[in-house]
Structures are given as structure tokens and as C-alpha cells.
Image (cartoon, rainbow, N blue to C red; front, side):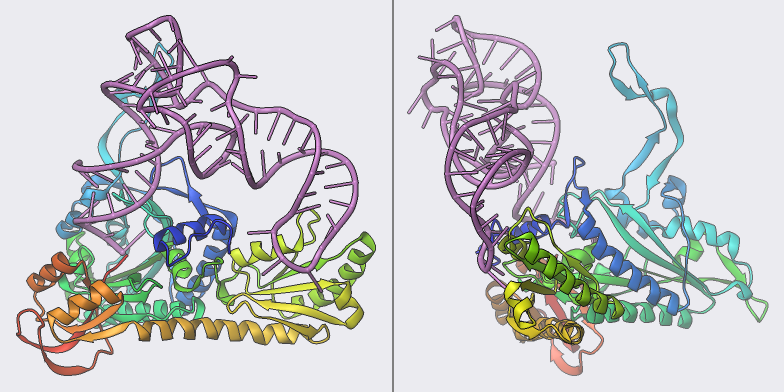
Length: 490
RNA sequence: CGGGGUGUGGCGCAGUCUGGUUAGCGCGCAGCGUUCGGGACGCAGAGGCCGUGAGUUCGAAUCUCACCAUCCCGACCA
């Protein structure tokens, strides 16, 4: 029984909170809806960032940085974009405080800004107002830029990592000469996200297009990857938007084409956020704590010494340094936990909580026999190995764990994805089985809305790999060419 | 923004209904000793203007009012 972690069965959402807090990933701050990301949590985020950044650069993108503040007038140029974000914007109205006679600090009303500044909820507007200056000719295109930044969306209800008022993310903003090229970029980046989710986070995802009503504010098309969490709910893990010429028109960004014609620029934008941390937790962890895929674990191997006196400890230390030299050579990260203030059992529990993939325990008994105990976090299995060659065992095991937790997540998803042909069936699955439902839909926002109202399930996306098949909408009976993905979502 | 809950040592809570000497408990913390192959044990410690303000009362953690903070559920959203 783990100390202080609510079981998934008992209360899934409390379980999630417990893991985030007890594994030392993050905590609530003094600011409503904003969290402190703690060193261990941030280390995982840094690993995610490093890999994503590498993938962005491999696909030809460069990093840049745009301002946190957006003048209100920029923000309001693209109508549907404003509609989408207006209700959740933090606004800066003053630039100075003053001290009153009784010592209170108050806003200085004389320091009112001429034009209010919006704290960016996303950066399309500030970036497109900048691109206007950069783009004149087809020779200036494409522009392939990413930025790592924080954004603020004033959410009604927040949850650590899954939805916070301020969050960290990356946002790519690209400009192209043709529609085809922008569409290809949009799709390419979705593929990058999917690859990252599956190969690094060990989290299978379903790629598809959003319906019109779920589209990003200002986009012509929004693509998403959707992952299934252990409670059967969907989590949107990344989005990539084809923006058409909407922002180019709003910000008057034109270029002269090869044919000497003046044309508006085509755009894409795409992003993933610290929400991925929440996805990572909910995809793999168990009632004992976090389970991390080795590729994102800050520490691959923890080594716990078991000893009765200094003499034994010194023997162990010597042996361990031989092992760690070999781990270093293989680029496997490790921690030798020789704290004298905690006993081994305490450390075992602690690293299980933190999801360290592999644990080694070594005591006098092992020194005498030339052995070492290895425990893997994903299955909690323990086994005795010869110290000789342990680094190779670990190297292979890390790879195996990475694959195994992916397989486990995939099997779980497959076991919890259903087909429904009637609305009765559909409602039964959504209410009683928890999971994804593939069903026919007539393509209208009205039907989508009705289903959401009645069941709380939404269309997560229209999967790319959903095969063409003749069907009838389960509500209206109108013809439908393929099934779409329904689920309750985070 | 609607509904509900909670504010008491660092953390988690009891005490509040039925006001009364010194506000308890568990964990944690600091000390000594014994321990150390799955969250150790003993001994003896430190640490509280009971969320804020006003009121009722001889007397308030406890009753009243207001405010603030925070969490959960809904609507909205990555």
C-alpha cells in the first residue's frame, strides 16, 4: 500500500493529483490557477523540450522569440480569433503602483496605458504583424519559426499541468507561398507530434481532423492527436492548424509571386504544451506512483546501497563506481543514493513514486556473491544479476521498458475503443464503459452539439485512418462515409 | 459565472453542533541511542495571535455578520 496515494479505482482525479504532488512534479502556487513546476517535473519537461526542439530543427525550423504583450488593436484584427480567446484574456491596463498615505500599495490611476496590452494567449497576431515586415517576395518564403514561451489563458477551472492559467509551450508559426505547402506543413508537424508521443512518451495517439466547431479560432482546418488516458477519457496531446490566408488578410501580409502577382501568404501554426506532462502521468502511472518511459526519465537508474557499517558502505561504493563508469560510457543516467538518513525501504518507495525505470540494490551479500538486485519500475519485478555485464542488461532493459509501456497503453486503448451503430448503444458505452467510440455522424454541428449536450462526449477528431464505409448517422440517419472518434475529454 | 466544501504548528486532520482553565492527534522537523535486503524503533524535545475584520458575551477556535483565500462539481477551454 502506497503512503498517501489515492488508488485509481477509488478516485481517478485525486490519484492524478496525488501523483503530481508526491512525485514532486509540481505544486499549486499562491497564484490562483498557476503552478510551480518543481525541479523533478521540470527535468522531465526539459527532456521533452530537447527532443521536440531537435525534431523541429530537423524539419527545417528555427527558434525565435516574440513579446509577451500584445496590443489590443493587433489582437482584434482577426474576428473569429478574438471570439475564441476574448473571454480568457489577462489584460494589462496600468504600468505603475503607488503608496497611499496609510502605506497601502495601489494601482496608480494616472499610469493608465493609452492602449491596453493583452498577455498573449497565443501569438498569431503579434507574429503576423511582424511577418508583414519580413515578407515581400516569394523569395522571403517559407518562414519556418518556432518559439518556446509561456502563455496565459484565464481558465475558469484549472488542474495541475492539464489546465493552468499560465502554461509553457511551443508554438510554431509558418508562412508559405501556396496553400498546398501550408497544408503539407500542417500535416508534417502533426506527424512530428505523433512520433514524439509514440516513440518518446510511449503513448499511442490517433491522428485526425477536428470538426468545424472544435477548430482553433481563426483556422480553416485543425488537426489533432488524441490519446486515451487510463480512465478512458481522451486527452488532446497536440494540435496543428492550417490557417489559410486568414491572418495574412487580417494583417495585410502579401508577397509578389514568381508570376509577378500580389498574393496573400498562407499560414500554419502548431503547438504542444506542459499539458503533455499530465498526459504522461495519466497514460502510464499506477497506484504506487509515476511510471516514466526511459527516454524521458531524468534518471534511468537509481542505485541503493544496503549496509550495516562504514566498512560495508566503502566496499559497496567501490563496486558501484565500477558500475557507474560503465553506465556513463553508455550514456545511461544514474543516481547513487548514499544518503545515510533514510533506510533502503524508504528509498525504494521514493523512487517508485518518482517513476525511475530501473533500481539497483547492492549489499554485503551481493559483494560476496558478485551479484546485484535489479528491479524494474513498470512491472515491479525483481531479479538477481551478476554485476559483471549489468550495464548491458540495463541498456537492453531500458529499451524493453520503453516498448513495453507503449504496448501496454496500446492494448489498453484497443480494449476500450468501441463501435456503435445506434444512439442507444453509443450512450450505453459512453455512460457505462468509459472509452472511445467510433460512430457515424452526419457532419452537422447540430448533431454534434446534441450529442455533447446529452452525453458529454465530443467528437475528438475524424481519424485519418478511419476506413471509408457506408453508414448512417446514429442520430439523424443521414448517410455518412466514415466513422468519427467520440469520447469524453480532458 | 452557478452549486457545494474547507481555512487550527511545515503537512494532513480532530475539537466548533452543545462557548469555560493549559487547543489535541498523526506525519514531518531538530537531539541522543539502537537499527539498516521494502516507507525502522525507543527516549526525551521544539514548534500555534485557530484565514481577516467587526459584533454578541464575564469569557469566542467554537455563536452572528461581512470579507478574503482555496479546493471540488457543472458551463467554457490546450
